[in-house]
Length: 481
Ligand code: BG6
Image (cartoon, rainbow, N blue to C red; front, side, top):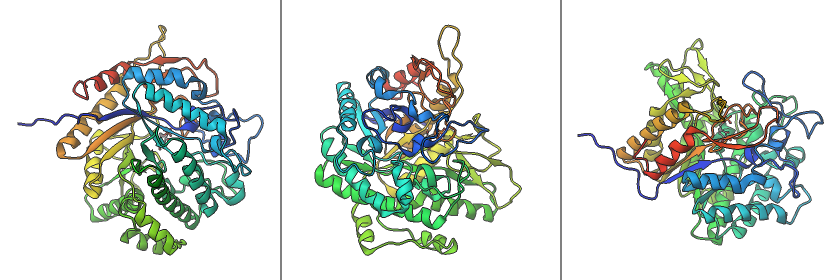
């Protein structure tokens, strides 16, 4: 007989957001400019632009976002009503260290997060804090081309020391970098690395220097390891997670060329960073990839030692889609999160051409658990979709419920397979500004926010049908889907 295992007691049902996509208040209480603050609006057909500094007359969606900065109490009360056990949020670095002259942290910025953590505690919601999520303080871009410079690594560690000390009793679970593997693809230069080359205009089409990009990635992996070491000295109870943007790769056919291509892609895009962060050294396959792509990074003996020492405690990843790899250049392509690939004829896509693949989540969970044998969390997953507000103000998002239900069913299958899955923080628990397109119309939330792509709206929060559905899922610990 086929019986599925239940979700474990204490499973972290949750929701996730990032500071730059929700907080707004971009210049309030001493906050400095971040790289998210210089990205214009866009849409699926019209790419977001990157401007050098703030240009008058441009619309920058991050500046107000959904104004969580002034609505956090109301929003956290809604999270509590939904029954969230965990809330994944990120810290806006430029709120704490606004500009190049700030050698002491901005007290107002720290107070904001004091208040957020206090509110979460009130409702027994466990915070999961991402230290760095796509919002490097902008001055680093002009001063040293972002993470390509070790200067940023040092400053990141200063930030970590401040956060770990200040919030040592408020936060137990930390993620050092959101989707650290974004720097394995050119798109990551800007929003993940703060690297801007002359000639880059559009977020989706950036001038690339792979050597510099992999150096920046190396600097981040070293930073992550050092942060783990520093953090554990400040509070040995701290638990650190990696965070990988997992674009699961299938071979397009069983032709050995496709199979090999898929394997190579999976190793370098999905496994490389996790291998370094959990196994403490560069994997064997990276060496050939570096050689063949003429990548030479500077890695000191001290770097090697710290990578070994500062390994992460649990594995987390974002999961939205899968892609295929094909050796045939004429294969139809699909778009995707940080990268697209060959189209899978068996899958449907959302309006933004991201393939929907719930079973791929079970496959991925087994893949990563088998590799690391560590507790696993899915720290992002959700459906970007256009919602319709009915005349009575309600939002009937049955498509989002269906998407989430199917993914949760596959999580249960994976748990039954034996995977130690400990949490699920649904992405964009409340509507947020889309990272890739800058739209509000690409909505993920179970809570609707009245705001359009151009900054109009009352910012009123409304519970969607999915809100009530997810509340039931949490209440029944996943028994009632
Ligand atoms: C992840 C990012 O890659 O994808 C989030 O960590 C992002 O910041 C999410 O919002 C969904 O992507 P998008 O482009 O639909 O907002």
